[in-house]
Length: 121
Image 1: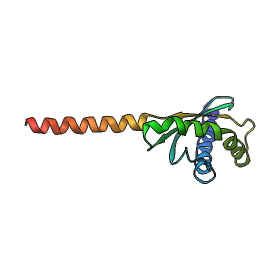
Image 2 (image 1 turned 120 degrees about the horizontal axis):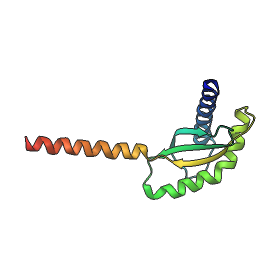
Image 3 (image 1 turned 60 degrees about the horizontal axis):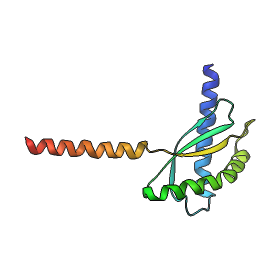
Image 4 (image 1 turned 180 degrees about the vertical axis):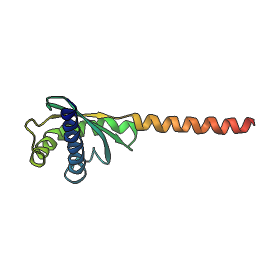
């Protein structure tokens, strides 16, 4: 069983690398802009891949970015098939990864708490 897990991980990492390059170099949709892929989760049968991304764009731009990625998913999947040799090419599902944003917010809250604490000393 661990061997299957490691192969799945390797395939997910390869998909992430290839997609990042395709999005950066080949995707012409202006809605997508600069995004960072933070991870890929594959189903055990490789039929579906959740592709997690973050963006420095304003939160209001997220629906447009997601729409651009959804629209490009067929193109990206086809190009992925030319670069990766696997039996089943997964259907791509793009999901916004808010963990970076949450981490940034938590970091600011901690900094504010430390400043407030120093004022009281």
